[in-house]
Length: 513
Picture 1 (tube, rainbow, N blue to C red):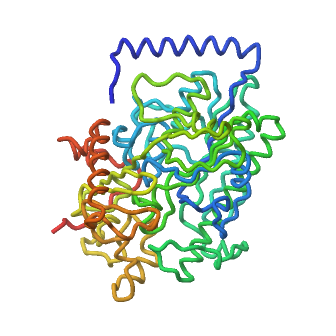
Picture 2 (picture 1 turned 45 degrees about the vertical axis):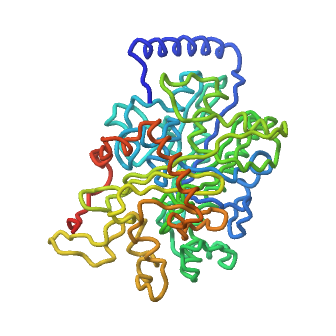
Picture 3 (picture 1 turned 60 degrees about the vertical axis):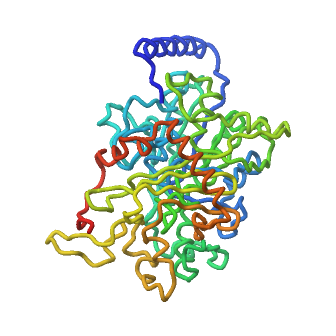
């Protein structure tokens, strides 16, 4: 990544300030007609868990409405299978390995990296946030004065079931809208805390969701407890979809709906074993829908592989905002979106990239589990840089008395691991392999044919029939990582292990043998 000289940085800031001042003068005399931007991001939701994708157990009428009136993406991918690095990447348009501390979990967010809410605000937009923005982590320690996602609007609350945030997302958006100057377009980040765990056990069935309609991924046991756990997860998706509907209705009443660029997606996959915190399909493949009035052919289905990082350049383009004074890896979706109305074929990307470093404090000395991945339309190639480590976390934790805790005090890269049925009941391989799929050490290379194996259970890396594909994707990944200066491909490969964890406790694990 190239950084400009101080002179050019100051020149860019001066020109940006002049443009902003000119825009501000104009806006005081007439309404700015640039599109508003509403960005809605769920916390831990995998593709295809919305009814627009044909997933029968999900109830998402408002997401479905946007799909009917806009474009539904079939192959959208997060930059990381963990919330903090994934959000930092889409805020900046950079890969996680380019973001220093912000590329790992629960650390800081260096101020040198520009974020789209700030850039749009400098271009005349009003920028607001409700719910979960960037995090977990400490942005203040980096000198930032607000969350990178925007100015907080968190005061409006509602009654909510156990395990669900009391933040009234829709009401907070309305408060933001009423407070902003009428002539200014807005960029608003609506970050739901759903469907992140914990879930109230049984809440899905209590609210009429049907366990018989659940499709259980092959890496989980298809048993009633898992089906009902997924129902609870789906109920939380339904909860945030209701708030989405209230925001859409409000925009419609204000006459703003057709002048608002609306994006709904998720930061990473579902918080189940072998999904979240893994660069497998259910960890990085996320839902995505975009509505943009007449610019998109209604009901479009887009099969191109896209990265959530591409939203950075997209937002700056439609908001006519200045780019930062360094290169990013973001590629605007505007030509792809407009191609739906023209009927022309448009190739956006041939592949997308994802990474993982530390997720939670789950290993000796707080070590992470570094992974890089390249995903094409047909294949997923994964490189595990430390195959000697446990991918879901070390199997035993040391208690305050210095003694090893029971074995279920382990595998903390799986949310609520101790209570998870896979960790609790499936450890015996004679019963079935689910526990081992989630926790066993993995080889340095993995290759999956996504069309035939979306659960990523059949590693083809050692299959001679796929040797050519393995070599091609491995070479492509290496070239991209070196071009974008990934420390994992340089002599500074362990720099990520030095970044401090600033949220949550540091657990104690026995030294590896």
